[in-house]
Image (tube, rainbow, N blue to C red):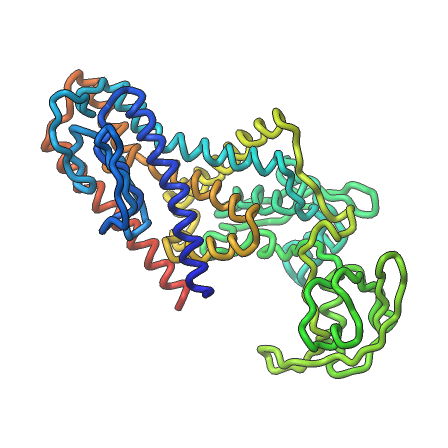
Length: 452
C-alpha cells in the first residue's frame, strides 16, 4: 500500500504540472486558430483517448513523465508529424510572434500555477514554525558563533525572517559560497548579531538542510503527540496534548530537552509533571528502553512530538493568512522568490560551485511526492508549486527540443528573415534529444546512488 500510495502521488503530481504546461500551449494555439491534432499527458501506449468536435484527440500515456501538444504542421522527433489538412491553419502558417507566444505559454502556465497555489495558501492561511531556535548542536558552526536555544532569528544577510522556513530559503542562496553569513537575533528581549564563516559551503553535500548543517534545530515544545500503544506513557495515563514541564524535578523547555533527559533514564521509575487544560499534574511511570546504533541503552516512554501547531504556545507559531488582494501579491512574490532561488542554484551548478549530485530524478520526486501527500494538502500543494516553477524554468533553457530552444530558433528566423533550414533544425533536434536524455540518465543515476 505504501508503494501504491507513492506511485499514485507521483502520477498526480506530474500530471498536474505537465497538464498545466501543455494546457498553456494548447489554449494559446487555439487562440491563434492553429489546429491542434493531439493533447497528450505521458508517453508510450495510450491508456485512453477521446476526440473532440475539432478532431483533436486527448489521451493519457502509460509513462507519466511528460507530455506534448501536437499542432498541424509540426514535425517533432518525439511527437511525430500530423496529417495535412489544407483548410486548417498549421503551426508553420502562424507568424513568428504567434509561434513564440504558443511556445512561451507552456512555461508561463507553470509560473501561473505556482502563483495560484501560493495565492490560495496565503488566502486560507497556513500555520508555520516561528524562527525560534530549539537546539544548537554542540561544536557546530552556530554553537561556535554564539547562538543558543531560545534565540529568535530575525534577519539573515539583510533579509527579514518571519518563520523557520525562511531560514532555509535564505541560507540556500549561500550554498557554494565562501565568506560570512550575517545573522541578527533576539535573546531575552535584546537584539544581537553574529557571523558564521563559510568556505565552499555545502558544495559537495547531498540534500543536507542548511540550518541542520549549521547546527540549528527548530523549536519543538515538549508537547505530547501520538502515543505508542501499550507504551509507558499510554499505560500510565499521559494523553495527547499534555505539555511536559518537568522530569524528575528537572525543568523541560523543549522537545530536545525532554528527549535528552529521558534517554538517560532507561527502565527507571520517573516522575513527570505535565500541564493539562491549565492544571498541573504529576505522574509516576516506569520508562522502557532501547539500544541505539552505538550499542548504548537509552530510555523512552513511547510518545511522539505533536505536529498540531494549533496546540502549540502562540509564541512559537506564526500564522500566514492574508486578505484577497494581499494574497494575490503574495502569490506573485512567492513565485518570484522561488524562481530566483532556483536560477541561483542552476547557475551555481553550472559553474561548479554546487555539486551536480544534488540533481534529482523521477525516483526522488516520487518519494518526495508520497511524503508530501502524507503530510497533508498544504505540503502537497507547496510541492506542486515548487516543481511547477522547476518545470517552467527547465523548459526555458536554450536547449533544442525544449521550449527555450524553440524560442531561440524563432528568434533566429525573425532576425534572418527566413525560416531556419530543415538540416539545421534536424541536427539541433538530435543534439537536444542527446542533451535531455543525458540529463535524465544522470538524474536517474543520482536517484539510484541515493538508494544504495
